[in-house]
Amino acid sequence: IVELSAGVDVSTFRPGLSSERCSRHRLPRHVLLAMGRMEPGRGLEVLVEAFARTVGQRSDWALALAGQGSLRAALRAQCERLGVSARVRWIGPVGEEELPGLLGSATALLVPALDDDVTSQKIRRAMACGTPVLASDVARLRGTVEHDRTGLVVRAGDRAAWIEAISRLASDPARRERWSRAARARAVEGMTWPEVTSRFEEVLHDVVEESMRREAVDLDGQAAPGDRGHDAEQLRSAS
Image 1 (cartoon, rainbow, N blue to C red):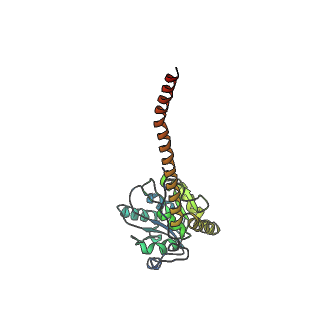
Image 2 (spheres, rainbow, N blue to C red):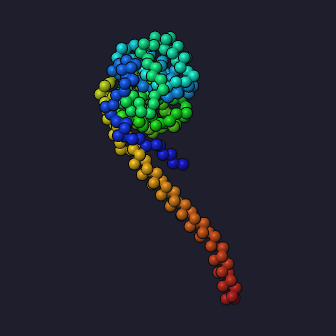
């Protein structure tokens, strides 16, 4: 089985973009962005706790949660309990036209999923914007983020691991800049629609060749019994 991910329009998703949501929600200089449904299995509880134990008390950092779902109220209560309500922004659902600016203005995209009920498209889009990504090591996201090159791959559900990952991200601006450049380069070199189309054509070509090879083998196998019968008849005639 060959899996091919969707491509990214790197002219739409590019570095240097901003979003009016930043001013509307009074986002500070550094923003940790998490996007998607607020449902069980998304690991958002782990993320909120890791944020609270790292940069959650700093006025120049915020956690922006974009989306909605059944856990919203529980997450708000968790933020209150941990004393970080003032540092968490509830962005709400985001339209397609707003995604480039929001992803481009984030310091990092965080994907703390606990299982494979998650897609990697938002990761590829963030990388095209030059935004580093911290993502769980679940199977469906495997290989999308290059560890310590375009971001960090973090053990799913491990609070200590997420605390360490956010601390590494926040403590080294030079590292963030390296990750940003590498993320954009990887998106441009290997995640564009022309690149995905080319890989699809290569896979299709290989499948057709393999199918033709097997068909040829099957035809040879079907011809073999008749050939053997013809040889036996010749032997009988000679005797």
